[in-house]
Length: 404
Image 1: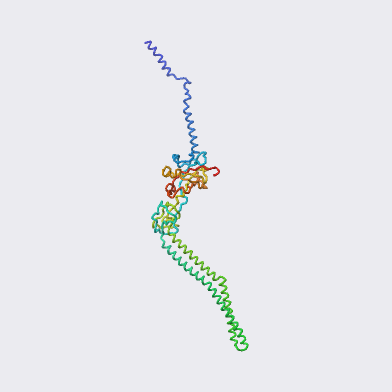
Image 2: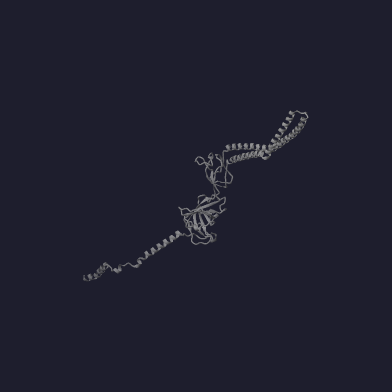
């Protein structure tokens, strides 16, 4: 028993020793215990720094960009690049398609639509001067006939005055010559009567009659001379010009009535596509109407082979955009379409047409227009891949310093 108790003592002492508090030096944790926290803090700072730099600068793919390389990028957020060589993409932004010229097709005269083209609907293409619709022309036909008859009457008055003027001059000259001959005859009779009166062959009464006839003929000569001067000085000529002006005025009224009659045929002002249809058969149309019951226009048309992209470029990125700068335009809806990419692997080519003179304070951006190059959109593709108000991704290429 004694040996067993002695053999158990070291075990109990060991147990007691294990329960004793350690020394203060042994309670200090090792330095390796703080190392993970220090590394995590450094990594956090590094991540924050790179995130801020990516937000401020943002990388852009270099070289010839294919849009499959940046599908993962947010299409709505413009990205700028750091130092890039000439031809590389320095900025990408999303914009919206707008026609270069949007035409509101409005009739020039008002009335009820009595005929409409069977193909007249949204999306259909028309050539310039194709008739889209017709307005009731009975009233305008009557106005034209009235103006035409008035012009014919004024023309007859002018022709009459034009032919009468030379005849009136000749008539005035003949009457004056006749009066002058009469004066000569009366002068001879007066002289002869005076001689006969002195010899008592003629009475004093005969002398007075001859003298008064001679004086009357002199007065008639003076009157005819005055009339001839009036004719030659322009009295009749002014009357001729007046009738000519009346004729021209009547012709202008007739031409106006004819134009109004022709305007009842509503024609396409340009070659383009119908975007919105605003009137139907039987509607009353009036170009000056503002009420909801009367249509002021027939439709909206645009040439979809000539388009622009409307973008808002952030002020911090506007220095990368210059007028005339080359761009690539990729329809957002067709950037993965095999048929489109086969035709246009890098999208449509275009150039910056203008930077707007004012900025958008609310967005902190400057409006920019990028025009697609002529010939890039064919007649067959018009309205297929790019339509008004669709989204498009625009990549701006770096230009040479001397071309800025």
